[in-house]
Image (tube, rainbow, N blue to C red; front, side):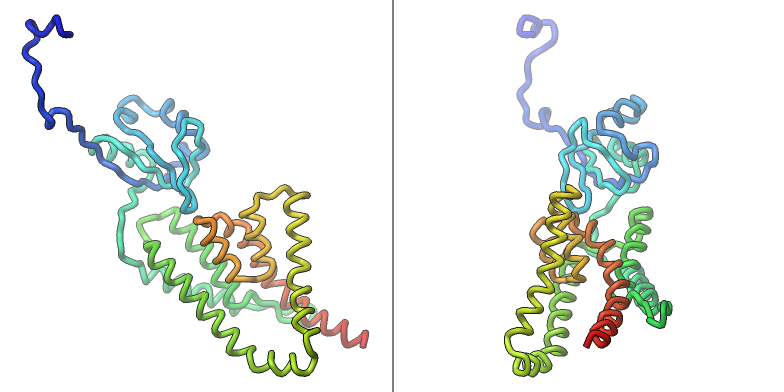
Length: 286
């Protein structure tokens, strides 16, 4: 190269010439043909004109960032961060899914509709063996959240909820829930402890920890479940909203919710059934 300078021309030093400009765009993957493929397979199967100048820098799944390695498997609902020239990135985004625009606005219509549908689900009941079975408001809103979350994953242009707004709703809802439980149970708790002594809280601790410890042993050593999902399932089994909130805060992502969802829904159905049944059995034994 040095010897060719007389024929090519003089070398020019300029910071502007060396500058390279690249755009970064978040895209929610919705293309069915890409679902289940690895990053390397997506690049191999893409047309040269579509893949030119577009690179996947990161993959976000369930609020957790995954390195975009050649063997990283992609799934619908993943948020892919594309890097490249503006036209190239826009072309790649159109082939993969929807562009996720950063916004601080909350879709209150979508959020309110989800809450109303959840309350409606919770009010539905069925009579089984003389016992009214219902999901309750919590179970109904959970099912509605799953439904509307699925709709949001299919149509990401609706239902926007900034992470900061979602976090304040979680924290405020949890604090309100705990305060309401404490206010409603506080007076009776003091009276019952005076009447039955320390045996009552000890029995409560044993009844609470017993099933959780058994589930922990079975889930970890028999079913070989991953710890975040297992702990989420145990939190759902206990119908413990504070527990799942703490787990999500510790893990930094929504992985525990995967295990929490099913067991929480089942517990909300089984608890109303088992409560009267256990009371009836206890009365007959007494």
